[in-house]
Length: 377
Image 1 (cartoon, helix red, strand yellow):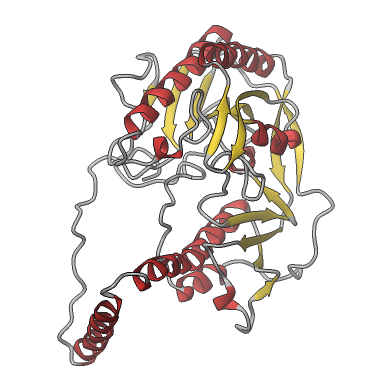
Image 2 (spheres, rainbow, N blue to C red):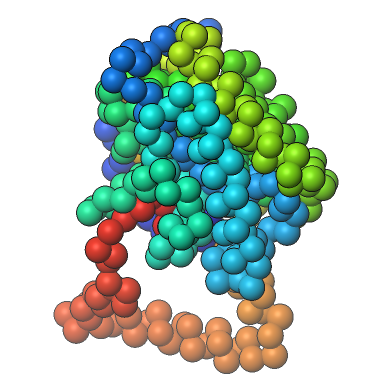
């Protein structure tokens, strides 16, 4: 969450509705599959080696108890980078011990840093960082047959409402539901790679994540800390946690080779929903014809996981527009609020006048697009 998602993708409701138009409506969103997904035992062909993708987040790290460590630009972020590299390297070591022949690392956090959250100078030299010439989504755009034999996720967090350290799903105030079941980002990764029969074999994070992932009993799961609240945790001794990361990563590869891991196959068509809690909000869609809004959630049906995921992310863009409510709460408490409010009203009116008069031109982006892309930003 990463947080690639702070403060959210500012998309309009029209954009979201357009995206959902590609999703089929029957059966009605209230119907659910008997099982949200099925499990398929995996035994990869290892004659040409074992390739593993490590996708990392940054909220479920060993030795971490301060949320400021995963926000780019804070004084504590440098410490977070050190903790992240140490955990990822511990996993890489274990993967190679277990028989992996190639390990790639992709940034699944997206703190806002224009560079990967894992610094290259800190990363195990045997690993290759995933970098592309064009932007990509680390959850869905790397999925391809025969690209990898397995995926390991490191530094993950529990889902929204789990009471974990920095627990969330995709971004603040969001829940993703597949066939009525609320999922974690780890399960989302599993469902995404399950499309090509690739299993998630290892995950690390806090104790609440461990409870959430009872749905994936084949996982090598490393609990690195106990959550106290969303902004505090009690870490285990880091040497102990990282030792477990290495040992578990080794076992995860050995279980993969032995056919003791499973890929997650989502049941289609997919009844998909996004539910919001503050600071996100989707109530703006309540009462719109054709929109199934109930209990703070919007539901739709998609033919496949790709359509389901992209429909969800566009609705995230709608729901996170409510974040500005927190901004206005802060501004109203300022002594110059009346002046700020008047300036805002005049600017809004002038924008209207300029657009209607043909004088306004959309400003170019102040930040040039990066030449290389490393995952979530």
